[in-house]
Image 1 (cartoon, rainbow, N blue to C red):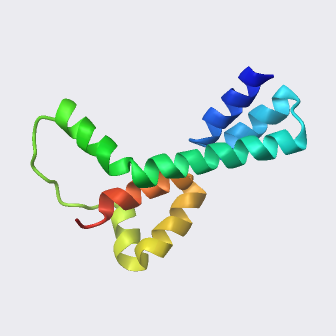
Image 2 (spheres, one colour):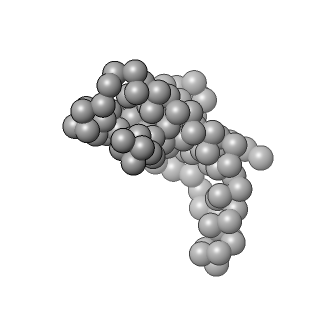
Length: 111
């Protein structure tokens, strides 16, 4: 049972809907599912919001050699310029999930 709980929590850090289906497939109780989804969701948001910049700097230092900044274009940037942080958070949560929307928002925030 502990492995199932850890699996659902780990999945919920990235995508809550997939974790919900997995928890039901495991035959877990409703309250255990609620606990796992809350724990995983909060952990995913914490990782994306508070550790996102440090993770991005680490990846840039280790794997990306060029330091040239490309101009920001595309659909996500258009949403950012038109609707701002609240619009990106709302629309991004529906399409990407909360942690991914926070990661995109951290990337677009000016320093």
